[in-house]
Length: 176
Length: 189
Image 1 (cartoon, rainbow over the protein chains, first blue to last red):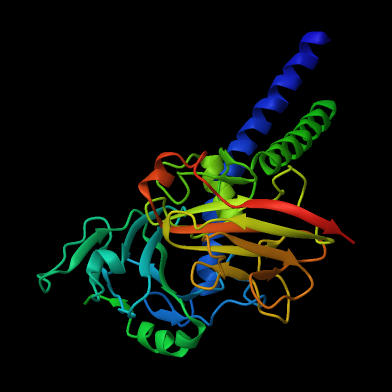
Image 2 (cartoon, one colour; image 1 turned 45 degrees about the vertical axis):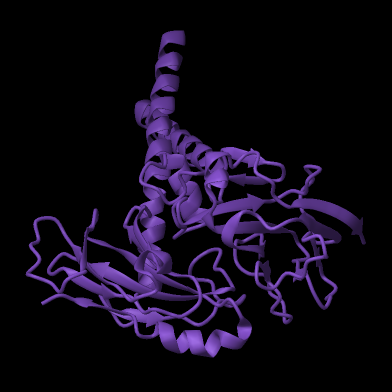
């Protein structure tokens, strides 16, 4: 009787441990999948320029009210994707790449480019990039899909319109 | 029949235990194994070297966070005395500029989104903070609007996020002891 009870207890705890690990391990993928669905805009490999965050912004947790966000849900399953940054002046800006498991696998910011725009080609496994203009950065995507997030700091409210206009020079499109 | 019922019972208990323990083991935020006064952070936030608990924590409470070279995020749910931040109380956040290219202090509601306020006063930043002659600043957190150095709070509780963009090497080297603003309760209604 005791041995049987012990056996059921061990079985229950083992299954519980498996469910625990699976829930913690796969929660990021699930949350990222929902985030990609919420930010996909006009489709994959296209850029969407969001409004400055307010209390009504409820797609991604903890939005900064001091940044302008632009997003691109990438999909490199067919072709590489070219990401072109804008170069908003006299402020911080960056473009950050996130894998489907939430890892931030690449970042480029205004300091690194000397304030100039940059061209990045994001490639999937086994993809070969044809010759590109000098200065193009090639980045390998660890997962087929993910999110590219452009941040532009509004360092002065009076500059918001100007910075909003400048950041719209950024682009995200399949490389054909 | 008895075996099937016992098996179903065990599976139900296992699901409750597994999901319940997973929920309790993940603290939504930016990871929090490093504590500095009321602030907590993780240097693996956003990084590929984050463990599964940190990754889950960030996904729930700080999705799309940047890695430590770009930004360090400190989160606070208590004041410097260790008491939970209360929307019925007024607080002052006092200190000096953290050592970073740019910083901001933002108030979020308990659901991790910006507080629902018509004032649009969600943050104070390196550019907007008003400092005294010696460089120190005092930012007040309350539900009564003030002209400068003020952030609106939520009646049912709130949390703070301190963002340090391009943090100095000293911050990345020793995030647990670097000087950060204190959070001091003033009064409660």
